[in-house]
Structure formats: structure tokens, C-alpha cells
Image (cartoon, rainbow, N blue to C red; front, side, top):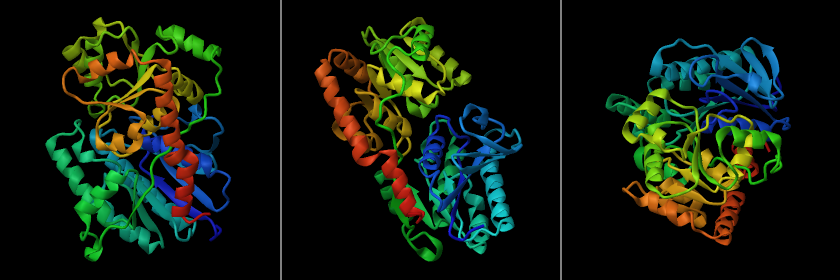
Length: 409
């Protein structure tokens, strides 16, 4: 293969085209760089298990073999996994790295970059660091947010995540942070703790978002059929889109919405976790409130963009992690955004959104206030939000920064 092509191996996303941050990121990175002859991406995907890859849902896929396909000119490879519960994520990353090492060796690839997303495999990373360096490559790391703070993990698992993060940062040639706060945190915790006591080398590159309008017209049949089937109408619902996990604060958002006197609906687009759903029902009895609507998943990106545009307001309850893709997408599409007041969210939205906290009644009061905003006030927030994305978070800008980082300009 040509020495002039920079090969970048992307490890850590479950699939392409799904709701996760890394999935969105790889989708856009490969899309924006698909016609650049100086780069070749190789993306790992899960062949089975939670969130696995179903390439039949994507347009423009070229099948190469049973577990390989081409998408946006990227070589995508599916990793079959044993059904072993929480440990599957660790096995997935190690198997994906084994595949990368084999592929690099068999194809005699010069100076590859292996970009690992999330800090799951700390106890094994030194082995892969040596192996990849021996092959003439480098390891780049995106540490994600504070995985060890996530509510879904037990105390021993949180301890593992923290130790794993420490090792992953140590054995990386470059740590790419998607938030200024994460970059500060990496230096505060790990300066002087790299190989031979060096400071970790870091760079800040955020996630991106679109600010264009959806291609769907207001009277598009796909949109009107979706609204009809869900009992919703334009500008008459608050919206949230994201993974259905405790640290995204669904409990607070649903509880507070139920407390509010809003006449609008609350539409929740997510991949429902039945166990967590029943926990919330037992606590909140939200099924008795007809305004609360779990409306399933939406994989049609133009439809999803239109649903965001037509939302009266968007809730964002993420409190763990760096720059969150669903927040950026909301700022790019929805005029009125109601965000949990944490550093990551303020860093991104600044004064283009309104903020709430988890104290009882705080969000309910904010909902009632925003329900009474004038169209002009809402439009001002929308203008500021889109300007914020254009200035700092457009996909064009973010992919340009990655091109500089991978030295492919």
C-alpha cells in the first residue's frame, strides 16, 4: 500500500449511524474525509451483542465479505464477540486491536495511527502500545468523559475505570480531548505520570454538529405520519434524544415535567432499557401522565433533524462526559434548549441556552417560564445557539482539525 496514505484505525464505537457519541463522530469523520486521497480509515464495529452493527440500515454500503464492508470509503470490520455481559466491551476493544495489529502487519502499513476511544482496557494497553510501536505506529486516545463517575457502575467497576484511565493516558502518544474541561482534568491528574515521568501530550478537538435545515418539508408525509403515529404536533412538544441511562437524568426530567403545568408533550427518543424503564415507572408512575411519550428510535437522520427543528424545547440532562453530540445537535437544530447546569454544558452552550439544576421544583418552574416565552425571545436563543455551533462546533471545522492532527492536509 502507498506510504503516502495515512492509515487511521478507529477502535471503540459499537456501530455507525447509531446514537452514541463515538458512532456519530466516526460517521461524520469518514463522511467529510471520504474524498481525501491522503487518508484511509479502518473502523471497528460489533458483529453481535448490544448496539451491534447493522450495515443494511446505512446507504452507500459496499459489502466486502461476511464481516467487512466499505462505507464513506472507510474499511469497516465487524468483531464477533462472546456473550459475557459487561466484560464484552473490554473483549471487544482487545479483539479489535488484535485485528488492527494483524492487518497492519499483513498489509505492511507504514506509520499507522490507532485511535482508541474510551479508557476500557488499561490493564492490557502497555502490551498493545509496545506491539503497535514495534509496527511503526502510534496510539491516540480519546478518554471520553469521567466513565468512573457513571451511575450505572458498581463501586469496584468504577475503581477499575479510574485505574484503567490512568494506564491508558500513560500509554498514549496523544490524548485527544473533546472538551476543555477534560483536557484540564487530564493534566491535573496525570502530569508527571507518563512513561519515564513525562506529562501526557494532549490536544483539544470537540465533537461537531450541523446547522443546516432538514431536507424534509413541513408537510412531508414521512414527518406527518410519524407525528400522527406518536400523537405529537410541531412546536407542541419538548424533546430529548439520547441513550437511556441513569446519568442522563431521565428521572429528574420526567419527574419535573410531571410536576409542571405545561400543556405540551414530552417526547423521548431513545433505545429503551426495559429494566431502567420499570424502575422509573415504579418510582414516578409516569404512565399515568399522557404527556410523557416514549416514542422509540428514529434512524432516518433527516427525519430526526426535522423533529429536533420542530420541538418547542429540548432537554439535555447529561452530566458525565465531555462535549456531548446530542447537545451539539440540539443547539444546531432546536431554538430553545434547557440544559443541566454543569461545566461541560455551559462550556458548549454559553448564553445560548437556559439552565436547570436537580433541586426539587427547579426544572418544573423553568418549564413553566419557557412555556410563556414570546416567539421573539425563543428566536433570539435559536440564533445564538446556531452561531455558537458555526463558530466552534461545525463538522467542517472539527474534521479540518482532525485532518491537521492526522497530518493529512
